[in-house]
Amino acid sequence: MFRIGCQISSARGYLAMGREAVKIGANTFQFFTRNPRGGRVKALDRADLDAYLEFAAEHGLADLLAHAPYTLNPCSAKEEVREFALQVLREDLERLALLPGTMYNFHPGSHTGQGTAVGTAQIAAALNSVLSEGQTTIVLLETMAGKGTEIGSSFAELAAIIAQVEQADLLGVCLDTCHVHEAGYDICANLDAVLGEFDRTVGLERLRAVHLNDSRNPAGARKDRHEKIGQGQIGLEAIAHVINHPALRDLPFFLETPNDAAGYAEEIRMLRELYEPQPGREDQL
Image (cartoon, rainbow, N blue to C red; front, side):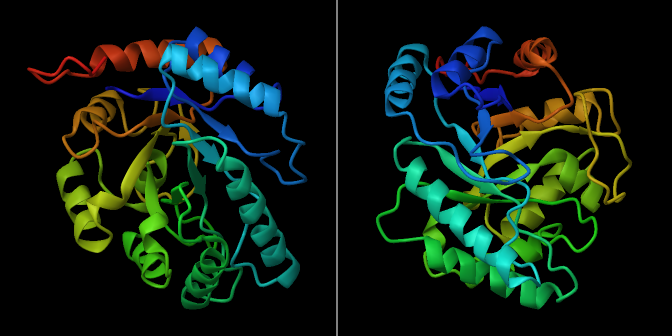
């Protein structure tokens, strides 16, 4: 099945998110676990959560992606920032245990001058502190554009984190098309080669979700500027290749483009037209 959705505000709760997703033609969605700029998590409304789960079952919503706040940085040079990251990770994973099938995505972090080796070790240490045997929520490291001291703009950096995590079976990767493009990976002309490198370095089996974004900047810009689908430097033809690639087509896709609800609805409609069902499969649309 073609799983396509977008970022939806969690301000009004789970059921409201589900209704908004269905309204715009999505069958999955992404949401921030709390204010994206940090802060405390809101009290959990179990009645709202239960109502959402019933609604989701009725409308075929699945494979949700929860996104950690941008302020989460487990490899900061400041101890208090690393401690905040651990607190957020623990709280979010505890709550997501109540949302079966939902994955948890986060930006690996910025080493803030400590160096990549120190940063990757700190990220892995944080994950070793919060991942536990029997946990059902898969945690995704997001591919990054490489601005500043960000870690995760190369597949090798993601592999270095994963290699140091004891419960590595609980880890996956979310590929962001804008980020990998701006990190210098040529997904426009050489998507096969990029995915081949990912497979050799990280392993395609770890690729669990795709942030589907165009980019305002050319390849290698390392600035992280998202654009609407088909209106940026990646372009509609390359995006169509992404959603139809054999290694990617069955993953859930999440739009993070600069849009309102009507804009997301139009992009979802357009992408459904570009998606090419495979002969003999009736479960794809």
